[in-house]
Figure 1 (cartoon, rainbow, N blue to C red):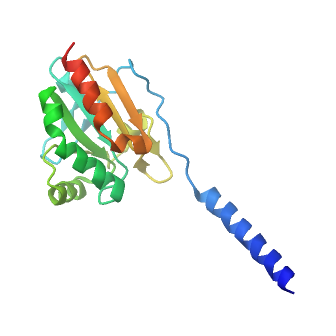
Figure 2 (cartoon, rainbow, N blue to C red):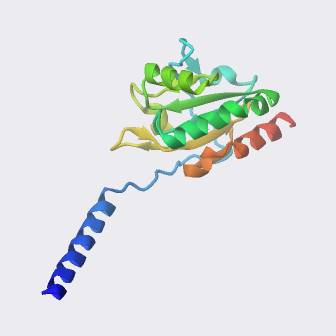
Length: 181
């Protein structure tokens, strides 16, 4: 009888593991590459006015730090790291933006709670920007974590995806290299 219970329990555990794997979503990887022109967009910001990426052409580098959802552990850590290292980006004359599919009021509250002073951009209405950057997890309606560093000519100079994007050092180093060209 014990052997039968063991076999049943083992079978049930295997079934549950298979079910859990079916629900797991593999991280979406961008189709964009370093050297590609960054897709242009206009998104609402926590500063109350829309931000158009192409408005920075010829002026500044731009860091787009896409994060999946406000008020979550990894996203909190990432946005706090950008805030703590903001001087590195400002020294390189780079503009940092946090970008998510959260609505603007949620982003504003998130930024206030974290003491973040750089703008957050909302891709909530259509999620088209996340889609154009190739990082939308469509069935969940959220963007995968990814960072894109865009130079003043509008070309992508650095990409980090997944949990590696929580560490801002790659983006900061890319901005530093761009500013010295």
